[in-house]
Image 1 (cartoon, rainbow, N blue to C red):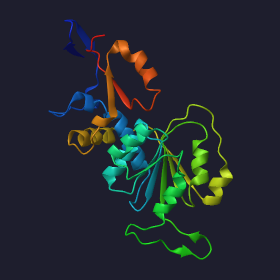
Image 2 (cartoon, rainbow, N blue to C red; image 1 turned 30 degrees about the vertical axis):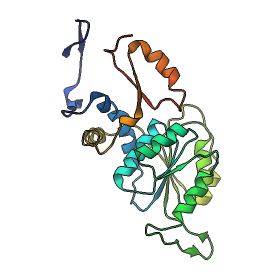
Image 3 (cartoon, rainbow, N blue to C red; image 1 turned 180 degrees about the vertical axis):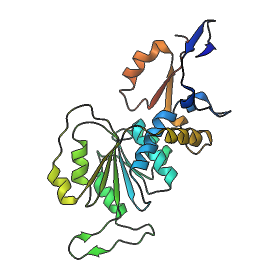
Image 4 (cartoon, rainbow, N blue to C red; image 1 turned 90 degrees about the horizontal axis):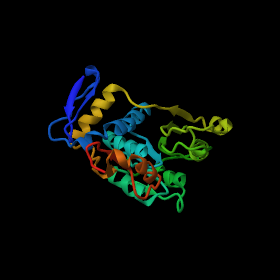
Length: 251
């Protein structure tokens, strides 16, 4: 175990597994290092998508998970990245994290917006019109980062033929999809979870090197007495992205 002296003069012991520890580089604020875990989730999702960098990605939902996916996509150099969320604050954060196109689904169809972009190749040239299937598009990869019932089915309905759907959002309830929709389009459905140890380490490195700026995601810091209220506050997407808990803070 490791013993740390904390404010107030008392000692706390915590048992840690040395093989699972990573040093926080000198100069990296601990508040930023604390964002390693959620950002690693985005990196893992993008890795599991097995991108060939010709795709046009669409990120549905710009909460912490969606923002982590956007940051990871930006690191790959893939684009343009299209981000979708009802919340103006989350759309703002999506742009800060590297999204190229920001969509408010109240006003614009995310899938029509995707088609308007994906009908052009990486050089800006219109993709060929197929004699039977019509307008062709670049490959599509759609990241589901909402995790509520119905969203997967909506994406399946909006996705183009041969589209790939990566489910990152964790839905805790029963959900329904229409398999025939996916069958007719030959869609690929990929579920992902968490991250690998090497992805965690890579994420910490990227944050420490300034390759990923996590500062905008930290919207508040509370002490232990403020944890319950923090969970309430996180329900308002216009106010918060990530709230950090600092046990040393006084009430």
